[in-house]
Amino acid sequence: MEETTQVTIEDTQEQLVALVGQGTAEQLEELLDSMPANDLAFALSRLTEDEQTKVLTTVTSEDAADIVEQLTTAQAVDMIGNLTPGSAAGILDELPSDHQADLIAELDDESAEAILAHMDPEEAANARQLIQYDSDVAGGIMVKEYLAYPLDATVRAIVDDLCERGDEYRDYDIQYSYIIDRRRRVKGVLRMHDLLMAKRATPIQDIMIKNPVFVPDTMHLDALAEFFDEHHYLGVPVVDEKERLIGVVQQAAVHEAVAEQRDDDYLKTQGIVGGEEFRTMPLMRRSSRRLSWLSVNILLNIMAASVIAFFQDTLSSVIALAVFLPIISDMSGCSGSQAVAVSVRELSLGLVRPTELVWVWLKEASVGIINGVALGTLVAIAAILWKGQPYLGLVVGTALCLNTVLAVSIGGLLPLILKRFNVDPAIAAGPILTTITDMCGFFLVLGMATLMLDKLV
Image: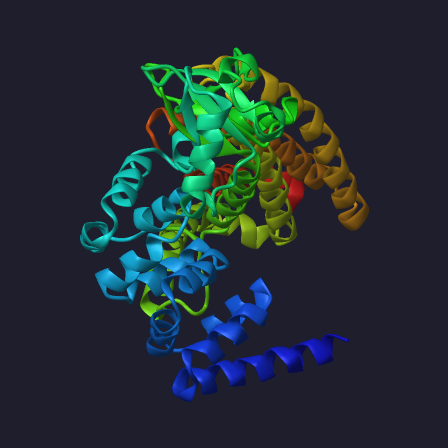
């Protein structure tokens, strides 16, 4: 079955290339419409930049916007960035406001301004407002496509508006409309079902849901996720500091943002900085992003290796120590990484403050002592059974125990310290932790072995 699917995708790819070269706009649109999102992303990623540009400029702006919506943000930004500002603006005008903002925020300032200048003034104003927010708060996730009506409206007035402006509202994800006062403060929520079932002369205040729930534009993504876990709403109105309605956050958008944040955090921990990376991106951009991480790591590893060089005489005298150095390094690193993960998660959820260093250290040290004793005992037993040398077991077991306590202490505290200095813990905590635990682990093993060298030789 997998082989058949692969052949189908390749055949589709060949058709797409052929149509880009000689096909009509109608043929190209028909093929693109028939392709699943994953196949579409695959096929477009294999086209050259010129071919990608031709695809987006051959089809209508509306169809091009549908294509862009099915791509990852990184892919879409690359393709939009290759278009003229006018062509890019025509496509962005057809996208939902939150997608517009996501793409514009990823472009360089010059390109973004050029595209905004060509966009519909209202769409551009909405995009400018949204890109002022961080991507992980309600203001950065909300959409500007919503319906709002005044308190004194009647059912007839709203129904007439929906009929007259149906084409404009067609792409809105409408489940509710919001009732506002003259200061744009949310006073009620109107369900479409209630609207359609009511008599035309009914005042809207008689059928709206009063005292609605709303969220501030500064609410963090994690808090929004908890909100939708507790309240099974499809969307919630977003208000500014004066409680004026400025947008709507949809439940689906929050879940998508949470998934994207997890993916982004994972990439950062693996050394992929500066956003998503795909192998279809320019070579030098991919290389420079990876080198920014690797070049720092090689310097840190040289520092750790210098400890071994300092004790090279001890190591040459007791060569068995070389077997246990990577074990102690790896196990301590794993313990420290667990502590880092917990601290980063608690920071994102607001469950711990960057100032609570003592409290976090006490919690981690207690776990480190228990785990350190357990792990140290195991490695000590292994050393004794292997070499029949109790002092070797004592050295490596004690070193692992102490280094585990140190690793979880540093791992727990480091994200808090980095956060206080506005450094992303997901990026910096890993390499710093690894270097410190390696240096300390090597120093503990070789330092203790040096002191007990006469009993080990």
